[in-house]
Length: 361
Image (cartoon, rainbow, N blue to C red; front, side):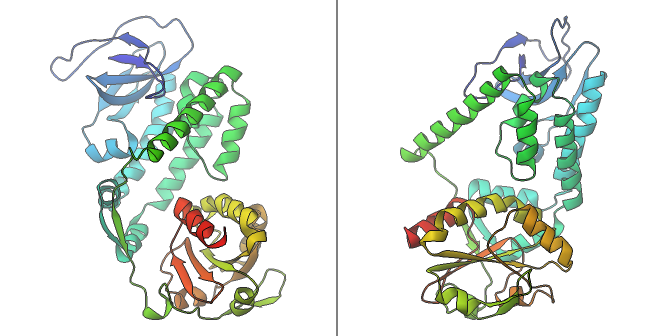
């Protein structure tokens, strides 16, 4: 079955045509009388993936790779034959697939987080060491360059603009949306609002059951939750010395945020941390950003660019502070209460907000 691309669960598919599969092959024939658009292929109720509908002979190859489908929601791994599809294949499909297929431990992590199980600190450390960061960067850069270069085709790129994107991609998303027709922007907003409403409703009614994942840390006794903090002193970008003990004494809750300018997940989390700081600073929250950057200028530039207007120090000498607190990978957040006890380690997202709310509200 061939349809126009649409927002699942919230829009009805526009069915264009259907054919039978014979000898593992199928062929659609017809005329295209409109601007190029993103199209979906289905086999029964199974979505096979997307390609671009435009005049010409389009050749599509499917790959029965379950893991790739779980991550990418597509069995299509190659499209060719027409200009837009050749470019879509080169800039969007192949780079992302190369990253997924090179992610040797990704399937293990995906299974644990989608079905429940145990994920240890060593598992996470091995996963991050093996993750193809350079391929991921190339894929993401090509993805956004493609969207920026195809704003004249809103019916091709609209689906890729509907997610929540972090800095700097949030700014790119904003700029692209500003160039699209208002009806396309409204369609995307309607989908995002509807999805949020439905999610809130399902969570409230208990109709969403999240997999139970047990995260096991190999943390030394001295810096586990419930233990008193270990003091340290660090130098701020303007050359002042601050100590953890002074900050703890003067605040109800202190967040240690271990990060670095070269750490993409760290930078992606900064808008969320900035929002938390703005909301809870007057209620007694202080943040100490602890960077493992060796390059001082790069560290300072990242602080300014990301608008990180809370306390910042650098722990570049073999990450001495990180070693004291058994931080094996970043980003890592540790919360310290007014009594000087460690109250949480490795929280992020909603869990982090809920913990801070519990303590300060």
